[in-house]
Length: 252
Image (cartoon, helix red, strand yellow):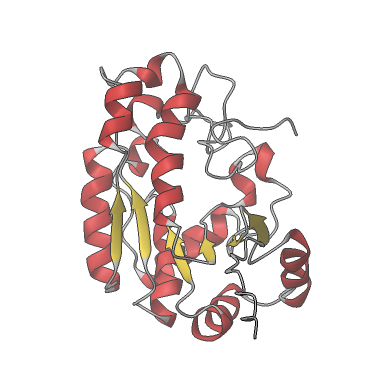
């Protein structure tokens, strides 16, 4: 009697979330207050499947405070590019401790790739896209591997390229959530005041969007909050929000 043919193992490579799924979530949570949205997802269908990604920048405390109010065990991912302001690293530790997060995950660039592609640490000065890809995009991709969804702190008011920002997007097969997409600066400031949240120490000096030290400058009156990032370069994003071509920003 012939043995039955062995069933071959298969790997499901279909994305967990598609653009259609993101659109459905956008419709489902239309008009839902941000804290309620986070509570529904973090304590519900995304529990154990989602991480928060934070730069611990000028406005990060608002979203992190809302997340902590729902679940302090949600993993918080921070990519230390090894070009960060010392003030940002101190603020990260202060804020994470104050809010009580139990799972702060710090990811750094792959040292082997740094030796190959940025041995002198100066790539930011002649190839900022390549530097961001090496120091931020690649580490974050590793950090997100265990998760089906992630939370971003982007806001629509921050730059002209973000004005049509949705609350939900599909990103490399994951669901990317932008809970503060429709928040403006006045609303953020009011939240800081209402909850007595600490400010990033560089904000008072005119740094309204804070990234790596070599590529961050003070914002001038009347400029977009992100105008101080990569000043002098035709670049407005680090690449983690442009999954189609990491390190590059598409035309809008």
